[in-house]
Amino acid sequence: MNPESPFGYMGMIKVVLAGGKPEEAMIYLEKAVQRGVSFEEVNIPEFKGLPGFAELMKKHFPDQVKD
Image 1 (cartoon, rainbow, N blue to C red):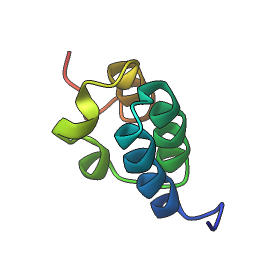
Image 2 (cartoon, helix red, strand yellow):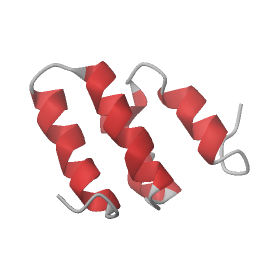
Image 3 (cartoon, one colour):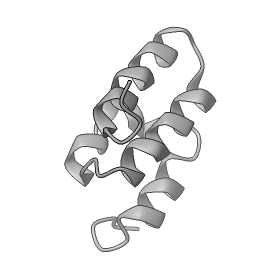
C-alpha cells in the first residue's frame, strides 16, 4: 500500500469493517482524509455509524458539516 495514497486506506476501512473492527476503521478513515479523500467520498452511509465519525467530519470538513 502506498502510504501517500488515500485509496489504500479506503480499502482497508472496508476490510476491517468486514472483520467487525469499527474503531480500527476510524484510524484508516482519518488517514485517508488526511491524505486527500473528499467529503463526498467519506460521507456515505457505510461510514456514518462509526464511532467518532461526526467529530472527524467536523474536524476536517467544518464548512460542509451541518449541526
